[in-house]
Amino acid sequence: MYLNCFDEIKHITKELVKIPSIVKTSGEADCAKWIYEYYKKLTYFKENPSQLKIIQTIDDEIERYIVVTHVKGTKGNSNKAVILMGHLDTVGVEDFGSIKEYAFNPERLLEHLKEMNLEEEVMEDINSGEYMFGRGVLDMKSGLAGHMYLTKYFSEHPEELNGHLITLAACDEEDNSHGILTALKVFKEMQEEGLEFIACINADYSTPYYKGDENRYVYFGTVGKLLPSFYVVGEEAHVGQVFSGLDPNLLVAELTRLMSYNPELCDISQGEVTVPPVSLKQSDFKEKYTVQTALTANSYYNFFTYSMTPKDVMNKMKQKGEEAFDNVIEYLNNSYRKFCEKADYPYRDLSWEKRVYAWDEFYNELHTIHGDRFKLYIDSFAKELNRENPELDLREFSVKIVEEAWKWSVDKSPAIIIYFSSTYSARIEITGETKLERNLIDSVNNSIEFVGKYSDKPIVTKMFYPYISDLSFMSLSDTPEDILYLEKNMPAWGSKYFYNVEDVMAMNVPIVNIGSYGKDGHKMTERVHMKHTFEIVPNITYNTVKTLLS
Ligand SMILES: [Zn+2]
Image 1 (cartoon, rainbow, N blue to C red):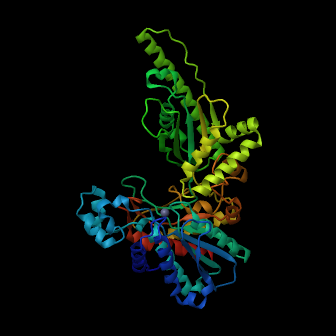
Image 2 (tube, protein in one colour; image 1 turned 90 degrees about the horizontal axis):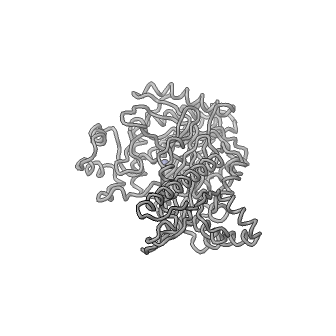
Image 3 (cartoon, helix red, strand yellow; image 1 turned 30 degrees about the horizontal axis):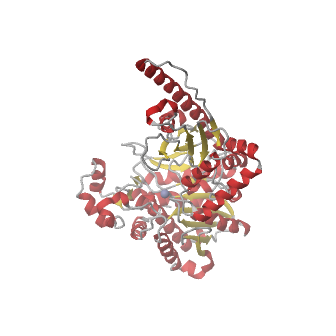
């Protein structure tokens, strides 16, 4: 069956966009409350009030909520359940500059954009009348609106379902995932009450891969993300005697040259390729100008994974760390030789030696030297730091722990210490080898085949959602041993950062992203293609759910 849902989903999207719900602002709570009120007015939830919940996030420094609905099908008494999920928060609006005040008003915004000198493709899309603009339209209030519509639809037609439909609107997707982590607890309770989750459908955004790419995409599985980070210790020198020191900035620069945009570091699985790493920070720790070179520096890089475990990534990073060290030592010696020739000084080899550690190797070395005293000290340092400054950025927090540990090192010669310092987004590979995975793949493919007739563009499936999403919390392709390795190489683990392997393992549900389609997510020209998003996408989801719960 094909639903005529365009107008209603367009309307809900516009209403959602009107509520600014930038992550880490009180708008997140406003938006959750609006969604809750939307459901509350429906007859089904008036009759079954316990099946609609608004829940405050756990262990959060901000007041915000998730909304969960539960529609029980009446076609049979299956305990099978499908989850529709999405997030209600958006990124900020700094990118809108002088037209910031219209970011949440699609109509007014369009008028202003028309008058700006924007690139050709954007102007074409404006003039086509096929797109809606606004903060969050693409990522992902339109996707959320589709799920709200479907929840309403099934609440009016429970006879179409043999099983349970659970819908989640989560907050804090763009930052620290408090929303989905809270939802995992709710899902666990549902499992304990007898529900069996067979699939999870997200509606996060999709976008063309290159200019002129006309395909629309549906994704099984999701990309994983790690943040390999480098603490680099050099040796300081007065600028008048540069060759007596080793500038850590030079080492970091070489690391960045070896890491950023390097296709050798792409991860390939099932014929799909991640984009290469890129640097997200590079700096030294000097606070003010002096004529002394820096002693330490720090850099970190985004790293996407499809098949690589945290240990695989660390091994690659150690290789790159050693390569960078070798290159810099060679470069320094060459420079020094040439300098000595010019100045007519006797040349001697600069005696730098490379030292590259994974955090757990460095930590264990210090533990061996200093015993439990070191371990207890670092433990309490981390906990104290978090207590004193709970708002501290996770990356900054992590490097402070490494810095503190370095104070205990006996050998003060230059070294690189590699660690992970951001939230862990799990990669999820769907292969079709389990019955549930096969079932989901077949249901989605059948649905696409049917709904595809209404679309003038090809709908293509791929095996990894490439843009990072809450899907990463619904299953785990890494093993518990892989996670243990990550834990041991993440200085903030257990003091500021918590990842509950058990909660994720308990879900272990196959995933798919059937999401909004548009362009320029996280940019001023963020826009959603209306026909595909308000009509095609919800119909793919609708028919998938009906097959899964038939
Ligand atoms: Zn999103």
